[in-house]
Length: 116
Image (cartoon, rainbow, N blue to C red; front, side, top):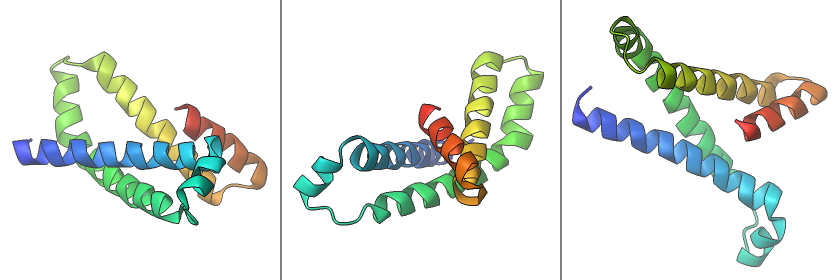
């Protein structure tokens, strides 16, 4: 992967993580902070998180056939790579539950997404 692609990938992953954590912090952990800052809508946080998550999935899909396959065959970074695959799979699955599941499964997906 070229340097610019690597940097862009890191930036998109960071944007996704920061926007998700920012929403969680502002909406769920400290609603009084939202009111104190005069934020009337946290929708922007969710939109940024959703768009960046979609880009992360595209990057993840692009990395699987070449990057991941080559590293696996070379027996390099198997522990960290497996952990990354597990985390991205859990986040993707729990994110899908947030949109498409019943109320009970949605609550499970919400907690799983936050914990991961």
